[in-house]
Image (cartoon, rainbow, N blue to C red):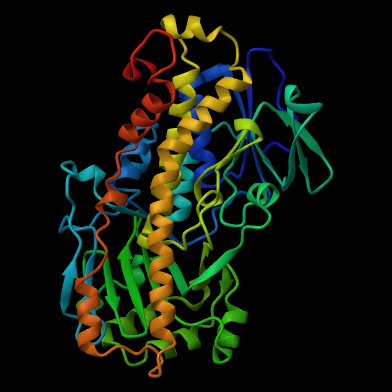
Amino acid sequence: MASATQPSLNADDTLRVAIAGAGIAGLAAAVALTRNFGSRVDVQLYDKATALREIGASIALGPNGLRTLEKLGVENALDDGVAFRGPSGLPMIYRHWKTNEIVSFDEFVNVPERRHQTARFARAHLHQSLLEHVDPARIHLGKKIVSVKEEAGAEGPLVLKFADGSETKADFVVGADGINSGVRKFFVPEQKLGWTTQVAYRAVFDASLVEGTPDLPEDSTHWWGPTGSFFASRLGKGQFTTVGIISLDPSDPKNATIVDNARWDNLADINFVRELYKDWHPLIRTLFARTPASSIRVYPNLAITAPLPAHTFLGGRAVLIGDAAHPHGGAFATGGSLALDDAYALAQALRAVWPSSGSDATAAGGGKPAKDRLAQATRIYEKARKPHTTRLLTVVHALTEKSKERLRRSDGGVETDEELRKRMKARAETSWLHEHDVDEAVRRAVEAELGAVGGAGSVEARL
């Protein structure tokens, strides 16, 4: 990968875009911007990692995320060889931790095409599918952004400074640097992450290791128990994932050792994890026995303690997307789709104020968008995305509080079987997340922002 930090200044009318982060969100933003604007944008990505790899185990994309990949031209990621879709056509099946019986399942509301049904990937494979659409010379590694400021006031370019002392300039900055976003910390240092009461122990390994396991479901399956859960699924490219999730009160002193050892992407203690599930159904114990110890990593589920007041900064010249904008603890396995929809919506919002042809382009004045146009674009982006992600965070915070209340009961939060089954059947309805129509949300946002503004062209024409 390239190591230079200065984007090419090849033309005054080229919009210089600096993207912090080269993960799912950052790559999707790069694809969306270059696909929409071509040579009119100079997109450069900066990642703090010294080697480009996607940290994490498996990742799911709902129908909305898959449709967005398709619109971005990343159809290679939708192939059945890369993504796994269960044979039943159900996004998830829920089984009892002790009996293995099916208690409940999720269903699609309006997903007529199989290629848009929930798909599961090894995270590295989805990352690689996006990477194939980005010029590697535009990715700069070992570049941790520590500040983003305006040079010579609002009329100058933005100056990005890196931890290694180097700097670069850009017209527009996209913070896509994940849950521990440096861009977010710079703009809103007071915002903190908090535990959702859950710790996940995730593994991805070759599916051949579980072949022949008696009673192994073909579909993605989530077993719920009184103090935690277990998930198992095939993934694309012959991979398999197991995920153990435990619920605990991080403020309880008896959980201090678990909390201390719960560091993001740390290697897990296989014996500790197996002990957690020693009384579960034999199938689950067998799956853990066949999970390579070296593959199990720890991921504490962290979410921002309150929705950010804004996702845009510096008068609309800097914006946050993905987990940098709305870390939600991985709830409902929707983080990947949210990141893709954010990236797509941002490009569509910019397209609405910076059209490439027609009378609207003439009205825009040609060249790169002026600062007031960028401000319009980011207002459209916020109108399209922030209410949606704030709704999710509101649900996550409510569920976290309920979990804390249960864990602090005198019985330690251990549910009766009746309580467990009731909870399994009363799960939150999530089609508003997984089947979200980002195009309609952007259309409404454009209408709200530009509907009263003069200039030719309908909302549809702008998009």
